[in-house]
Amino acid sequence: MHGPHASSGPRLPRLLAAAILAAGGCAGHSSVERGLDRTGSGIAANFDGTVTEERNYALPVDGIVDLDLETFAGDIVVRAGRETKGQALMRVTVGASHGHDRKEDGARSLAEVDVRAEIRRGGDVPTLVMRCTTSHDEAWLHRTDVEIELPEMRRVRVRTRAGKVHVFENRGACDVHTADGEIRMFTPWAITEDVTLVTRGQQIVMRAFTGTCGTFDVECVNGDVATRVEAGEWRVLDRRNDHDTLHATLGTCKNTITVRNVDAPVRISIVKDPMEYGSIFSSP
Image 1 (cartoon, rainbow, N blue to C red):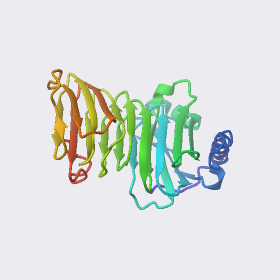
Image 2: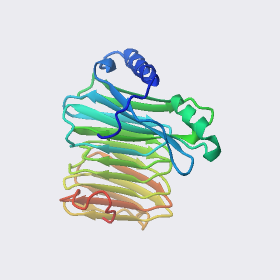
Image 3: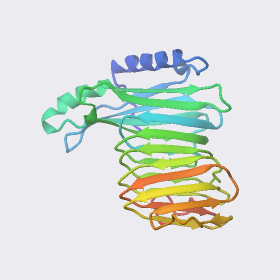
Image 4: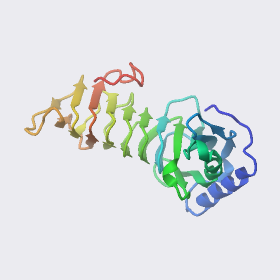
């Protein structure tokens, strides 16, 4: 992950201490102080009055990990299979939109946005747990845009609002909820675990490798559903099926693929080369 590496001044020790305390209170979790590397850029102001600060974090990981991420608002982009062996890299752009007349208020308020990350152990694979919170009285003026790069990623859980969620190259279950933002899940792996994708007002695009299977439960109010399945026993016989509804099964797996959207389309592709068209292509 790339970004400015200038010291952020006296705020750095406080943030590190907060992260260490968060980890210390959880039995069986890795010690964050052993591996957390945090650097931040200076505060920048945009033309619309928004002020931002970039914060970069790193934690050591060994092999495949699960991800559990929650933020109060902001875009999320998660990638696996990158050249980040042995590390989970996290870039958080913290923003405050107080307007042109309150840029100084916005800059000061960034200190009230807290970012914590730790590696929790105890399951069959470690879990990267990340939480972004704000204690500001005008919390609706804050957001945290998060980018994460992992060497290998299995299951994913993401919660945000007013933000897109893009997940690339997960090997297992994917559970994503956002109140207002596009969802994209693209993976070159066959998915045989539960998937839940929920948003409104923006499209949902799911693309996975042939061999993916399960029961599909897709509802799209004031939108439409389009699918492309290149291999496997694809059964679409339910009487409820319509342009905005899909109830179907693929293969014999018992997992469920649940998709919910409002006022925007859903696109699902189970194909031999799901990464062929990159992250922009949407049609099944």
